[in-house]
Length: 210
Image 1 (cartoon, rainbow, N blue to C red):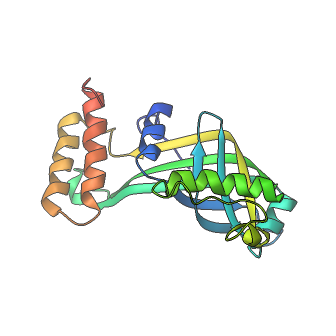
Image 2 (image 1 turned 180 degrees about the horizontal axis):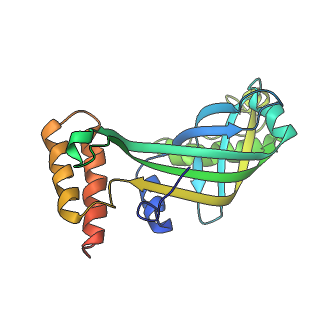
């Protein structure tokens, strides 16, 4: 992912962005020679303080063979995106996309023990399903323990994080503000989230609290 100096996100920025309920991404592993990458859409649990990401996938998933051959993966999370027409942006009138993207370069560890898989599932339940604190996975016990053989757990150790907030920060502040107005006027379903990111970045440029 190309990141320019003006749209690079800080650690505090990407942590806050992800903490606002953004826990679904695209996991990419290296496929066999002569083929493309193996891509898996998935929910995940980020533990940024521990530098790891936890998730689980079905045992028949083709990603396991890829991970056993090469444990290096990338988890990509993208959001708050929309299209900005060229005529909005002044000369030479080049259109662009606004978006936020966070890429985690990781080393994958496949978790196959029943206890390890149960631990991952229970941590995911605490995060995704806090309203049912009594619903937990215990190896060997009904209703979920016997189902553990149908999944593998995955622990990703984070090696590098790249974050991009692409909202025309290179433009003069008044032009960036005008672009936010354009998004408000157009009012398409994806515009407001991108507009809020644009305004937040603009406020930061102007020395206001983010």
